[in-house]
Image (tube, rainbow, N blue to C red; front, side, top):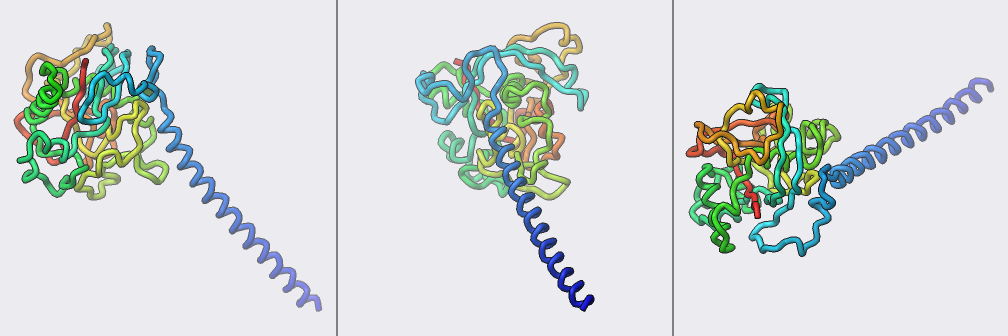
Length: 300
């Protein structure tokens, strides 16, 4: 009698124990889903910290006093800390003041670039062969000619559209965040089990681009400022002046001449460290890479 009673109680306890386990698992799953959703919403709601009374998100459509052939985002004038401490060519961190400017919301795609140069289609690579993927196999001169074509298309003086200066690029990439590693903050791009950029995680193979705009935008509403493809900048590559911490630099455009042009932003083939806002490098303006693209800015 006692044995039967004991066994019955044991089965009942096990039953309620299993129910409790399932309830805990269900709550954990819901919390995880809620956390990921909350983080995504937080990334969307990041607002740029500037002295302006408007941001990239609340400018009315009437503020567009021109009709660009590609979607652009306005980056308001402001001051920021440029550079980093991870590599010697990122030092010293220094203050930069910039005028406001427009920048392409997305990297220039294959179909965008081929409106200017239809011949580019035969140079598409496996890493980027779809219409909505970023245009690669592009030299610095190719990118600059595309900017000139956009000026001609809108009957504007050449130079109105151009490649972003290195300072403009970094300021736009930071999206209003102050001295954070990445456009979304200090946490890694896959911390919460969903990716925030196209890159090469944990040395795993990655050999192609994603369509532009596949990941969350930064605080200015700009997409793919880390990963997917590196991006050409206007400047020649050189070290920052060693005494630049002693003053504020206004609208810098880099050295007058050097050997390499700057690229920024990391790519589908980059490790996490190269996705940082301050990371920089460069190659000859005559060369191209299958992980290097570009976007344009408009200064007026």
